[in-house]
Image 1 (cartoon, rainbow, N blue to C red):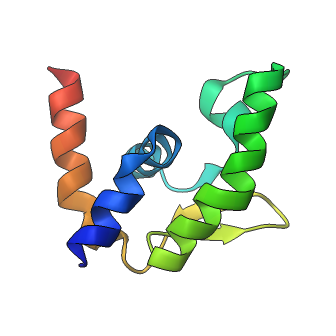
Image 2: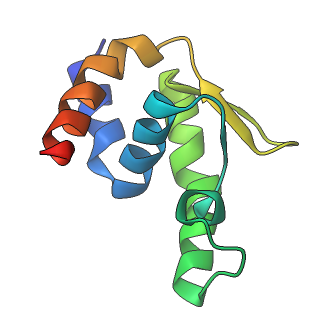
Image 3: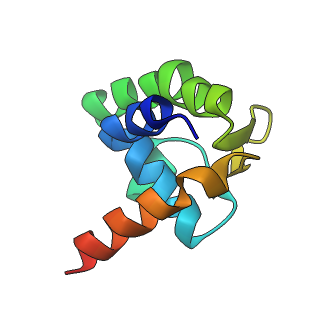
Length: 97
């Protein structure tokens, strides 16, 4: 695992939230609405949704941490997910405390 890519993936809250969600449950639906549980989004949440689709999901997919089916908006753990798993578990255990 490239330390730089792992930290880059975890730097942004949206990417971190998605990866932590995948740690708990695989697969996930893409987007802010599925992560927040809301059906209607505010303007800010819509901007986050656009950023998720155009920046964060492609970046995580490039790193191999996720596989993203753009037609169904389904995200599953990618071939490199297990390389970032220890960092995610550390974050999850610290958040639980």
